[in-house]
Length: 553
Image: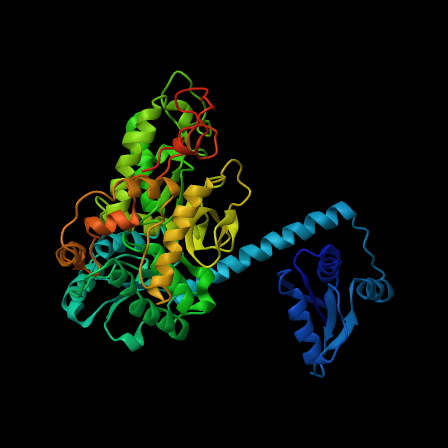
């Protein structure tokens, strides 16, 4: 009995040729047996090196063929590569191969596809044996209640993946968590292996594959914006340490909420540096609000509007960019197939609405968190996770808060919402999009606030100073003659107005610091780089009523 082992890179043409010859010999020779092994191109070299070291062989190419010594045992006898196997077949069996180059390439490609399919099937089986560990922080928050049914539906992680959910919160919330756990079990979801409650900090994120960070609530009061910013640090430091210590090495962390989302995300990346690339902030909630407002104006559905880009601070100074935005399946005089789209800005002739009511609506929603309810928060988190695991729709632009590496001129080291796509289990910033340059003044305003938030949080800056342009400073100088109250009275009044709960919405004066009324959410006008009216030279006349206008809040 002659038993040979044929191993090679899954996309190797010579492996394909040797495989065809080996199959022929096994079919026609009763004492000839062949065992085939394929490896993904990414791991082939490492696998081959380990094999040769183990058996003390010297071979560096694909394929590798050796003979198993069935009658004597031992490590096997190395035959060599394709040429040596062909010579062996000709010498001992009088058989040769006449495969064409085209057929070799076709079989090699088929081998690679088959290998990938087998790997995916294997991963699915592993998922059934070992469920995906999903941890939800602040699990007593309303968003968690709305998130659970989506996670257990099979839509987010796939119908071949079972999940185990751990509800994590403070000890005081344990009773509510136990009630929620019982209700989750009553769902009888085929995709839910188990659900448990954790209130012990040292056990947090054990073997976690996914961590969902929701808004925290506390009774502790703060008296200034700076205190509110610094109050985020202890919990983020703790979470970062525990994720590094307890979570799976490939854990994916997704930060949601409506206050200081970018800041919490950047703090987590600082205190969990080994998983920094896998920590992101959800921006789809703001994106959804913008799409809904546009859909009401256009008389269509929000889902038919694509490629709205959210830049900057998800829960503060951000910029809603409509230059790439398109609308599909809109009933009008012009109708096309499902893939047919039209630019949103070409369909909205009312530029005053775009730069007025639309901007004002988004300012109120994104700055204060009003109407950013539990349902929207849950859906945004679930959709982002779904894209992360299964890819975003082909050709569609998605907004995501990620740690900047200098893309689009954004300073490194801050979390900034920008256009991305999800593919093959990861995300990629779309730096090759056309006509998405951001006005320098708008970019400076957004990045300045994010940089200052980070510096204040880390203790490198004492006071938060909202960015002010030259126009802002000039306006401030004009108001210096306005009478003021006694300094002590004024200080007490400001302190009282700033006092609020640590995790609740910011009060009005804080909103004015974070979101200035003249520059918050900018909406890009037709086919132009964003530019405010005040920045446009007076000698330039716009071609139409909307051209050149980029009204900022």
